[in-house]
Image 1 (cartoon, rainbow, N blue to C red):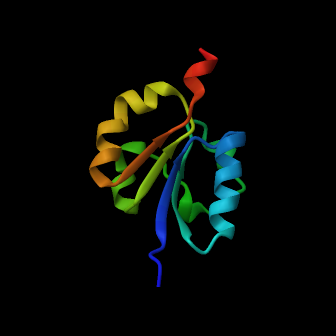
Image 2 (cartoon, one colour):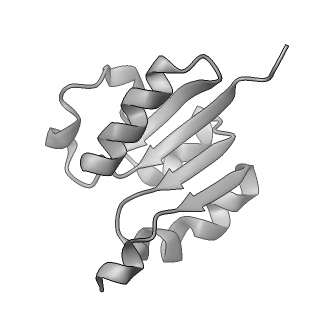
Length: 96
């Protein structure tokens, strides 16, 4: 039986929302957490998924963290994300 991957999403804009909807509908994945700078953006999520303080992400035990926020998040937390598993970064740098 395949392993279910726990995924944390950092950023809950349009791309983050898209990823969360697909994670929640795919049996191969489990949503570990969602963090967004503005908590108001997460009102449609079950509160068990909403991470208030990004520095506490390890408590949610993700296998994969996907950053779809701002590149400064990767700069600040990227090395920590890699300590717990796979880290994927969106290609938003092209917008700069």
